[in-house]
Image 1: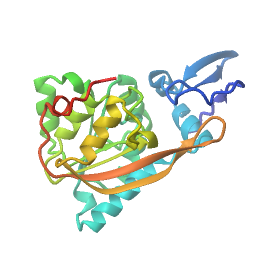
Image 2: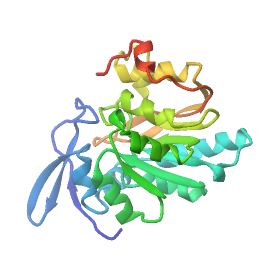
Image 3: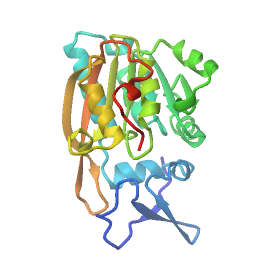
Image 4: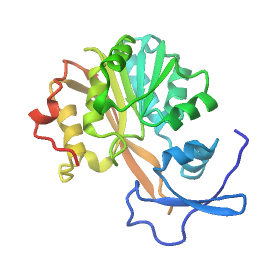
Length: 260
């Protein structure tokens, strides 16, 4: 992508801000606009801005890391990566999809909440996804559910999208339920989400799932997700697990998990 954007980070100390609260300045045609890191619709509208911000400036490594440990896990399980039928959930503009495509997955379906993500994926990576759905998984229509189910998904990926309100538990759970028993799930999550001291609904949800009868964890690896604006490493866990049983629709209620 040839477009280069003029990005400036705030001069004030942003260490006290959450990752979903951080912002940056974008100069365009003599005007300076402040955008939050999670203003994805506005970021995706500008070709190359997402990559320049998160991958060039902040050195994000998550798609490669999650793709790598998913491949390692399937190799260890003596399963063929190229036969996977993947739902890339919270697909954004296709960074994770591009990694999966390079590994040669059989079918790759993207899904995101905002149409700007799908438009950016088809604009920047038109050959990556076989289909891309713009949908709110907390309230899928019967028609949309049936259409996604027809893909016979046996792997779910979700990178840099869990927590911070991007994908809530009651959206991630329906996505995971599309994966057939024996299939795989690969995602990354902020390091504090696996800490017992984190009592938020999403943290409890992930812990309950990972250590439940429904998922069998194969790999949980801590790694540097990216840098903060101050250059401090932000650590995440990359997780690969196998779905071992069907997950009930009322899983959240069964475990008394409330949405934050």
